[in-house]
Image 1 (spheres, helix red, strand yellow):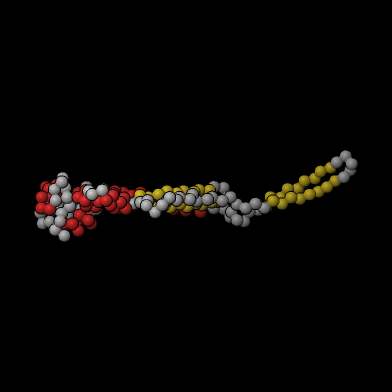
Image 2: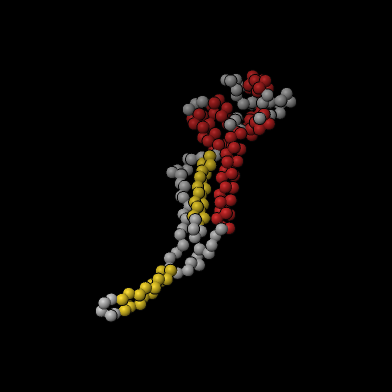
Length: 177
């Protein structure tokens, strides 16, 4: 599961890169949107009563506006971060937005819920999916639980699975791939 955190970070970076490239493209093709020439209309009308009138109409309009989408979270118990942005030219407007999941936050919330339900070993096992927690547990002399086993029995299973080397060094999740 800890490998998913890297995947989420890569996806977030890719999203921000796409947003940046889109904004750069739009900004390079930008005309002076705020220096708009007024629209001038000249008209002449003539009636049968030999009356003539000349009028000039000048319309000044603001440039169009792109609005970034508002991305909200209903409460603070959400493991996601949001980002949005918008760029506008005289012709084209682009707005984007999205969210990124925080996998470590989700892992902590899952672990807390398991612990609150009395499933203490499962809560620890959930946290042990993070390489840092796995290493800390091993350093403390209490290897992470596996297959219902704890302590030295769990350590032997982890060694057989290749997660712990013979010299009690942890094999990081990314190294196993």
